[in-house]
Amino acid sequence: MTRSTTTRRTLAAVALAAVCALPACSSAEGTDEAGASSPATSAASDSPAAPDETAEGTDAPVVDEAGEPVATDPPRPEATDVVLSNAYWDPAEAALFASGYVSPVIEDGGTCTIEVSRDGNTVRATTDGLADASTTVCGGLALPGDELRPGTWSVVLRYESGTASGESEPLEVEVPE
Image 1: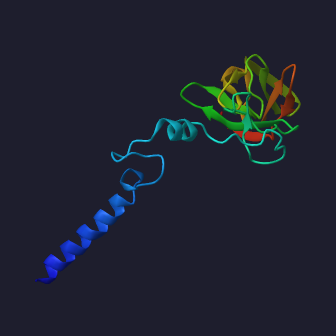
Image 2 (image 1 turned 30 degrees about the vertical axis):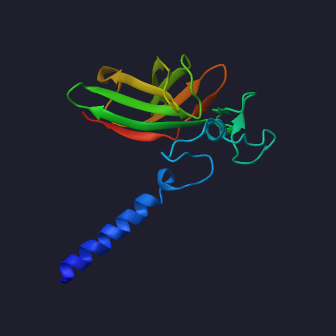
Image 3 (image 1 turned 180 degrees about the horizontal axis):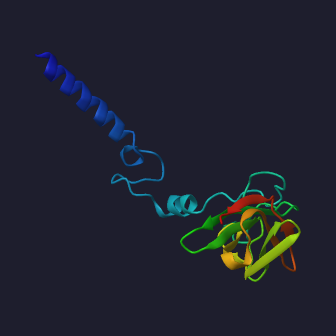
């Protein structure tokens, strides 16, 4: 027998052993000769064991009266983060654009405001916040260039609603001559 034949036979034996380790090949109690589950076993294996409903402070899922898991979110932090993720001058549009988000707030209708300041002058633009999957988005904020003198402007994003408020860290944007 050649080495190649021995290797193939060994691989075939290993594959056969792996296949027979599957539940359909076993003769465990509750299966018939064809490997099908008996009705009594099937009913028990189809319903998951109900986790402890009083497991507060653990990673155990919450279940309803039928023992089914219920989707829950973790508690949200008390603090509201307002993030100015983007602020820039667009020479093609001759305008200052900004966008950001509010976390962990997820709601429609709050007011997003960019406040652009330089040398005691302040210009503002507002838009409604839009709920996203995990934040409130403040997008599409723009100020036309004719409202801004050339120079370095400080841009801050503010958010205000009935449930949350906050302010971002400032970013600087250079408005050219």
